[in-house]
Image 1 (tube, rainbow, N blue to C red):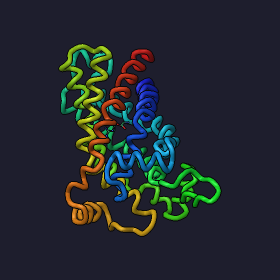
Image 2: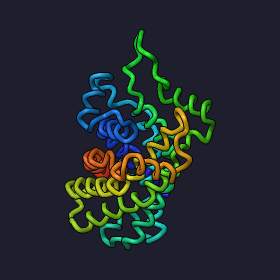
Image 3: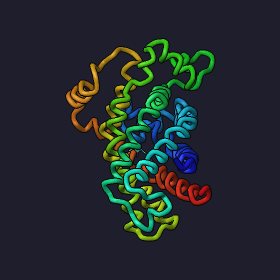
Length: 284
Ligand SMILES: CN(C)C(=N)NCCC[C@H](N)C(=O)O
């Protein structure tokens, strides 16, 4: 199992994450809180109450976890494709693998990384939704004082299964969308013929946009399921969350954050694939 795929996945994921985290924070708040009139209102209120640091809440843990998650994602994808079509990353330019194999390998990678991602993503969303200004005398302290305190508090208040709240929605979100993610990247790379940096950036960016457009409805459900355990339990399960969200707020609720997901997805994934490909060339 080529280890360089995992190392390249780790470093490239961290680069993309830092670039996109502020937009991700605004997206999560729009998806789970009905107090904002839109993107600009959320950005202004966040900056006014929490300064620019408010946009980076919940990032410290994903920076560590993206090492695991992204290396599992790219490593599992590449090795699944190797098993399915006996083409290693090096010879994929010469003989492009079957698109069905690419979609299946991407979906397997999406399924596997979702389970690694679930606890880290839950902690990220819980911290991103804390809108209190940074702790200072006279200001009510946040429920969670940081990622580790958040993990300990969830374990104490909701039990070990509490750390996997929303995991099913995450698996259903990522399995098909990651298949599409890698299919778009490989297909566009092949169609753009050159394997230069511009191709990596364009193909990676569009792979991010297309996969996040498909993933957004379940991204909304996932975030709501993750926030559900914090106070009272509002939903009896994933389906109940979907039905009651649609009934109370209309079907448009499943496209909350679509603009932000798309705007963020291009640069984040352009950088991710660009650094992944160059790191692989450097490492192998
Ligand atoms: C639609 N989904 C869930 C994905 N495309 N996931 C893989 C890319 C993840 C990347 N670090 C990002 O945050 O965009």
